[in-house]
Amino acid sequence: MRVGVLRSALLELTRRDEDTEAVLDEVLQNTTAFTGYIEEQMAAGRLRPMDPLLAMHLFLAPVMLHVVWRRVIDEYGLTAVPVDEAIEEFTAAWLRAMAPPRRRR
Image 1: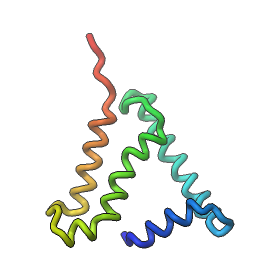
Image 2: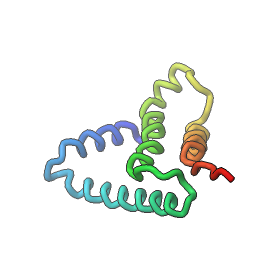
Image 3: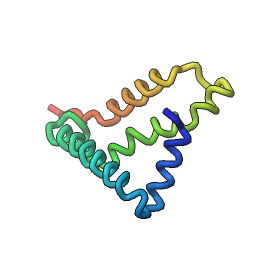
Image 4: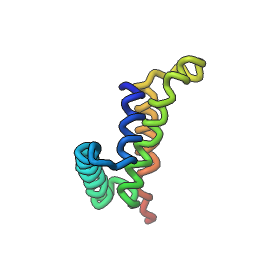
């Protein structure tokens, strides 16, 4: 993933001018699909109930930050964990955090 493209896209989306409306529409469609899926999983008792948009942010923000910082991380040898493994770790942590509360008997 090209980090420069990600940064530019995020900045362009926050400007909200006529050139970014088509991209924003697609982002909103994808967000709605993702949060809808999360909401279904919460309703089925597979995920802890919370605002689905916040749950999506809870997952995506660490991944995006890691990808943006990865060049610096690699340059300074801050971790030997490959990107794919790092994303797997973030996913596992999110799933643990989103596990529904245990029911008391």
